[in-house]
Image 1: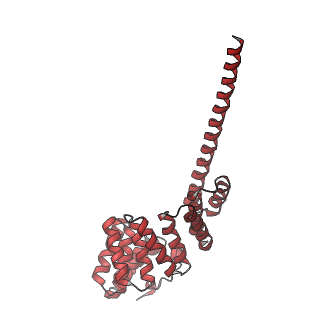
Image 2: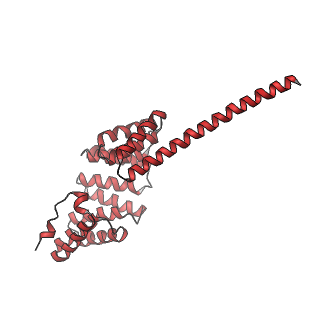
Image 3: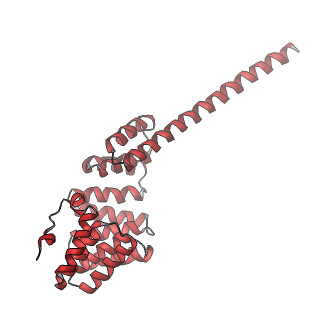
Length: 247
């Protein structure tokens, strides 16, 4: 009876230790998730440095987490620290070489640094890994525009819209590309569709004003430019708004 009691006590101790370990592990996981939610909230408010500090701390606890490097890279990219963002995306890809989103974002970071050839390589890899993601084709289309490959860019925008027919930014970019190619009717149709899908995007109204100016309708162009300014175009893009002073 005494032997049984000792064995029973030992078993209870072991189970208690195991249970404590599970509770501690769950507590750490819950705390980490709370911190990541907090970081996402900071990013949504444009407080990127605060979010980055949280990711720094989380990476110390989980140095092999590709997702944490990716998240910190995105925060750094959004805050204009593109070179540092590339290092984070490099690390995420080193940990997991098939990380399509990391290639997508690294392409954008290279784009910011005017490394369009490098960006195109990452765009191609992102499409290889994420062939059904419209954003991959949209991003490559933007890169091809910078490389003066208008035909290639147009093909990418077309395919992005095939995958996602309600992708407002693709209509806007394709519309601007058509404007550069002197296809005013096509440009106006795409920009109008972009406005219909996203009526609060100030740059869409700026592009519409450019089309109307090309058509010679300066008065109507001014109305669209005023709408763009009202929606924050001047502050968002730090651009000269010359149409407001046009006759």
